[in-house]
Amino acid sequence: MANERVLIVDDEQEIVRLCAVILAGEGYVTEGVSSGWEALLRLEAEAFDLLIVDIKMPEMDGLELLRRARDLEPNLTTIVITGYATMDRAIEALNSGARRFVLKPFGVEELLSAVEDAMAQKRREEEVLRLRAQLPILEIGQMLMREGDVESLSRRLLDVVVRQTEADQAVLMLLDERAGELHVVAVCGLPDGIARQQRVPAAQSMIGELLEAQEPLVREVLADSPLESGVAAMWASTEPGSLVLTPLRTGQKAVGILGLGYRADAYHRGSNRRPPLSPSALNLLSIMAGQIAIALENMRMYELEQQRTEALAHALEQQRELDRLKGEFMRNVSHELRTPLSMILGYSELLTSGVLGEMRAEQIGALEIIVQRAFALRDLVDNITAILENESREPQAEPVPLAEIIEEALADFQVLADQASLTLKGEINVRELSVLGDPSHLRRMVDNLISNALKFTPAGGTVAVCLDSIDGEAVLRVSDTGIGISETHVGRIFERFYQVDGTIRRQFGGSGLGLALVKEIVEGHQGTVQVESRPGEGSTFEVRLPVMD
Ligand code: ADP
Image 1 (spheres, rainbow, N blue to C red):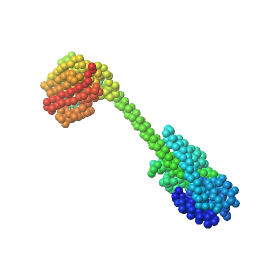
Image 2: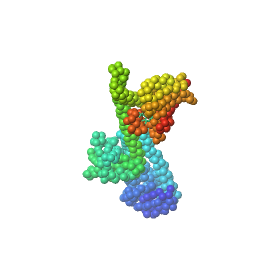
Image 3: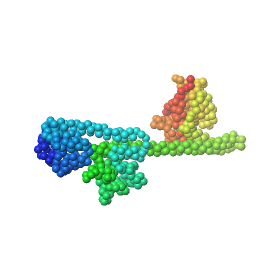
Image 4: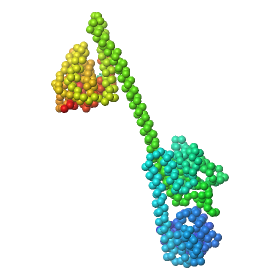
């Protein structure tokens, strides 16, 4: 395959040149060196896809070079070149990992077929490695499906990483952006207590650099060097070795750091030291770090969302409790008001009747004002109670004969109408008509309409209450010849507390709750209410309700 890099090592320049010419013809990029030492320097500096080594070389022979090269990169693909005299060593080389050998003297075809074979085998092995590398990633992916919290997920993720990278120690730290520090969420191979207390300022030079990095950072921890950061400090209690620190990032966002520790004895081999992780293992680590970052960030966001939901649920619960207390309070207040009101009305009636002695004209006038205001107050208390009931209590659903309710109301309001010099008349055109609903609510609705009509009609006027059945609906009309409502206000009179103007309240009393309650009750019975009105001429309120079959 074109552009693959080949390092050729032979003390005989002719062989190096020959190999270079043959391979360059096939598109390989070659480099030649004449000793093992030179080869190691090149391998340390750059990555090669293939190493071709002569077995018999002075100073460091091919076999030694092979061993050291594989210490640098365990998956390095190699071919050995050998004469018959070194056949035993060639076999030894194959046993220690060389893919092919080529016998001297060799022709173009022989070299090419050995190189092609070795490279094909290398590609197959890489594919296997790639597939194997998918396993931990799959495992991490599966962890996302399971329930848990950030800490337990971190611990499980760390286990997977440690298994794959054979680290002696591992730590997973998450970035707390607001506090500007990293805190440990999971450790492996480190004293649990010590490490878990650890918080590391994110601004520290190495940490800051690492959080911004895209690749793992490999650092050596020497026995006598002072440890330079809080991360390294975690290994203070252990022997010198290597740290592999990997940034955990999702796209542009730094999530935390994954730290792996390798004890020195784990990677000192012979005279040569190898880095704790090969380039392919570092690559896998980067991929795993990406997956881990996503997993943890998702879990963190999920936890945050859950906390918010809980806070909302708590607030809702508090709101409900407040509503309940408010309802209870209002009920108590209206009960406490109703009792003295009944007394006021009762005694006023006694006084008016003359049972307690004749009264002078001006006394009767004053008494009338008391009675009027007491009735208005009772009306308000009744409306508040009805609104509260409407909000909190499931309304009753029973057949309600509307005609009866209207007649009762007409009888009750007759006194008030007489006092106000108004004509109150009823026109019940259907008797056998029932609505499925709550009798006390429906009565309240009728009362509010009649009381408004009486309230807003000057003396001498008429209030007419009419019940019909039209298109299968009960139609109740309350008309008056009163002051009427102008177009600007008519759209808003059904809102709670809305009154056409403040002077009306002073003149007629009221709270602005009556029509709002009418609308709520009517709609609660699947009905509609509307008004037609002309200022100075009067108003007609029309309620339509579905009737029972
Ligand atoms: P209130 O307790 O003030 O009567 P309502 O909700 O019953 O409250 O009525 C709201 C407003 O609508 C009243 O203040 C009044 O301005 C107007 N209104 C209601 N009914 C009539 C009516 N029959 N004629 C004229 N205006 C009315």
